[in-house]
Image (cartoon, rainbow, N blue to C red; front, side, top):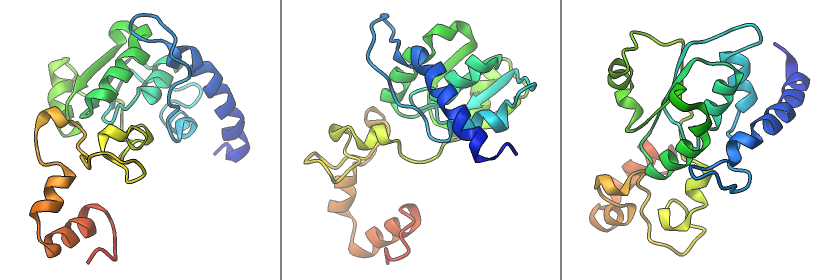
Length: 193
């Protein structure tokens, strides 16, 4: 629509406009510029182009809250932000604190988004945003065990408190065929078999 030039110019605007929101924390201290989400300008362009208003949005992969903060800052009425990662929930809670009751944050999987929307009394929404995949913040935190770049236990669970097997457990208990199937199916590795 607006072409890449418009997106590049808009990106600079969005980055600087969000900086004060993304720097605040629950106790008001400043922690430096936090994660700026991927495709932020494209999300804003397609969900809230100039002149369009939206009342209710579900951000099913809330992460650090950057997409939701940008949508709220641009005038979205309310956001239901859901994430399975408790670390992401903490970061998003801090980033969305300035928006008060317009931001509803839930620690859960996006698979249950309709239940959480119904609990808010929402019978419908204007948009659903899913930024699927692993976050760079998860890769960059060694103790999370999402990366081979660090010497740390191989965990790879979004929510360790929720139980379930770690990646190390799976590697130590599955046979070679099961591991190959797992990599092929979930790792999207065509050579996994």
